[in-house]
Image (tube, rainbow, N blue to C red; front, side, top):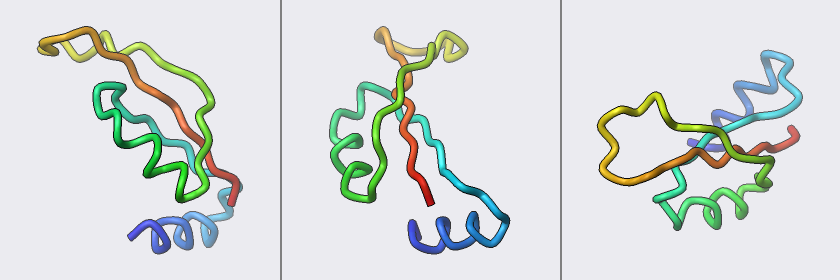
Length: 64
């Protein structure tokens, strides 16, 4: 699925793919690193009002 998504983005002329993952999913950064993504920062997740613990987003990017 990841290869399909990357190829689809390339056909649209995209040069990078940016994603956000929730910090409480600690296994995700390693998985996305294997696909070539690198961490580029963090973003607030304050829009998620029903979170049961403090959370934030980790932003990741990959050049195509």
